[in-house]
Length: 112
Image (cartoon, rainbow, N blue to C red):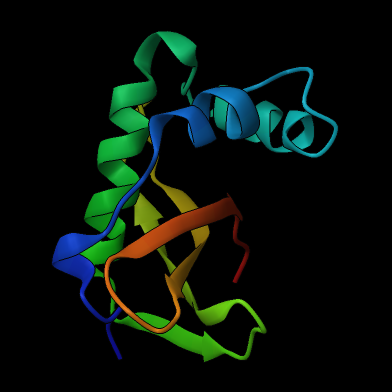
């Protein structure tokens, strides 16, 4: 199953800058280490944003998870990294009130 309305997916840049790539965010700082190890930093945040959107549009690995805030989807796959090694990533998306577009919630390294 693919992410519904994947071609309309939204990854807000501040979510990446202030959360996933932040070394000081209480939750994000742990994820930041993994992204930094793959070559993603604030200097190339656009590359991470593009790869996450590409994953949302192309991945066939998608699960729907119940949520009180809307329809939540988990999309897994690999993204290209600045260091050239693929990174397995699990991304979470939300259809607010069940309507498009899907909004990016979070991402974290995924181990099979």
